[in-house]
Length: 256
Ligand code: COA
Image 1 (cartoon, rainbow, N blue to C red):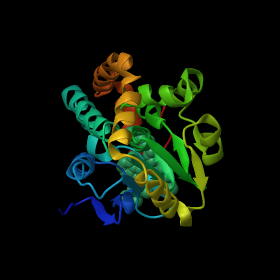
Image 2 (spheres, helix red, strand yellow):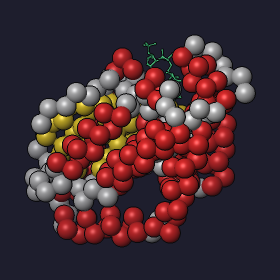
Image 3 (tube, rainbow, N blue to C red):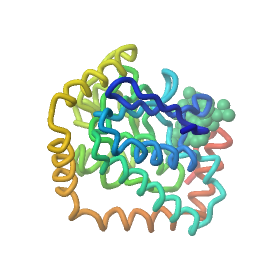
Image 4 (tube, helix red, strand yellow):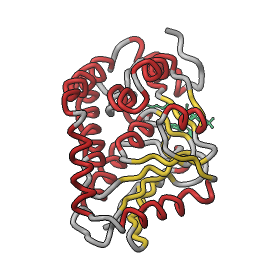
């Protein structure tokens, strides 16, 4: 299958998806997200593939968020739909029978970090940086960030990051439990492949069952995802949203 925004390659038991929008810091436009979803679904019944690695092209960014230029003029209806469709992509990664590993090779911001958090495992390069800067744009996160960040690092740290838009480095992310390992950027993909080799010695059906059971642990929080869809959509067209997205485009600080 050929894609416009991602590169996919199978290397032995690993399926590597690379977001290929380096000049835009791998910002996630809607088509990119749909391509990631399609790629993940396309290998679910491939018995050779024992792990999926998701990474970004280049050495600067995993993904610097949803594509602000694309959604800046959306209205509430389009914003809500964007969030619902984004959740579906994240759920596809989270519910993949084949383990998904985010190989975070730089900025992991906003929707990019939400994408990383939807993966089963996160491995960071030493230069990786993490954050949820949506409040700078007059928005809450819309791709599950308000829920998965709490799941991964706890409520206090999650709320602090979500409302300050602070960026943390790889060491802090490791300390918070947002990532499970830091490796030099040149070893990032090889390390993820080694992880897949290790997993490939285990029962694939048992691995799929573990993923299903662990995901079930968070089922009771599902309404939080629905509220996020609504509140994300409600932000579109507000003064804060217009000011935030204009400020980004004009490369200045928003004045709320
Ligand atoms: N959406 C759309 N375009 C984006 C983007 C995003 N989320 N993040 C970066 N880009 C684009 C920039 O507009 C720029 O494009 P241009 O060269 O056509 O002007 C290009 O990627 C390079 O980004 P730039 O801002 O010049 O790089 P930098 O090194 O100065 O700053 C960041 C890097 C990550 C700090 C900065 O790009 C940024 O703050 N991005 C937005 C992060 C964000 O708010 N994400 C959440 C979105 S929901």
